[in-house]
Image 1 (cartoon, rainbow, N blue to C red):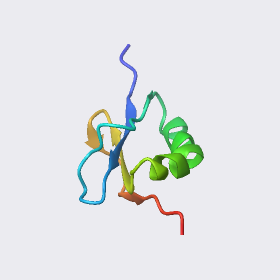
Image 2 (cartoon, one colour):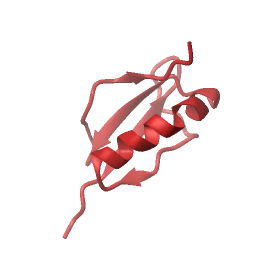
Image 3 (tube, rainbow, N blue to C red):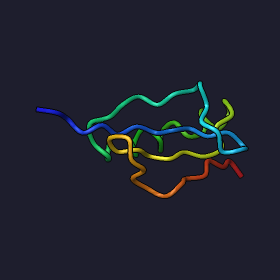
Image 4 (cartoon, rainbow, N blue to C red):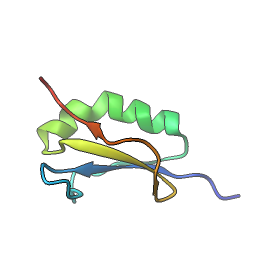
Length: 69
């Protein structure tokens, strides 16, 4: 059985994917969204300005901006 994979691509100010920090791979969309909700401030402090959720390699949600103010 192949499990679905959910993963965030974290983006810089120019929209390029960051090499670090990286997202874990999740088996549910709920877990992926919960992780981003708990982690976005730290990710933003490390240079991520937006995130895109991928489901098995395809974009699953609209771009989410990570803002602190």
